[in-house]
Image 1 (spheres, one colour):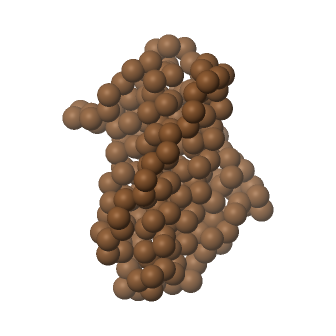
Image 2 (cartoon, rainbow, N blue to C red):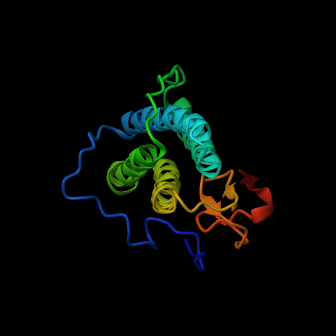
Length: 202
């Protein structure tokens, strides 16, 4: 992602349209936050399993990518859980069993498909509902997650295309929104403008 002149939001960005064949069941914003937590929890478990498999299959760089993305999903869970806790203090985070990992190329496509669903279907639907309900905090949290997920999908597809031509570039994780940058050529997060020196390297 390129760094814009201003932090991207629903109001100043045009890639928040909901896909025509949406598969997302939309409830109240509280319901949607809980659904997002469940989805992100599943993604975290999946990417953790995929990271382990990538290492076992000899794909060290891709293992680091899966580890960075798993950590990014924990950031999203934390942001969403904080809002749920305000509305439903008794809510308990779900637990999810990790799926069986497959060959690394298939795991990358599975990851990309999940991230594409979140960025163009789930989060736009949840953002729209939060806007209708006037929940600005949820709009903000969903928006940051949506923008980060699109980059995760991009990272997975690039890794898939370069599976047999890996490099040693590190991945850098923004601790605020979960954006992942590959390489050293950046100064700040293009989503939340967090400076590079606060990122975690993988």
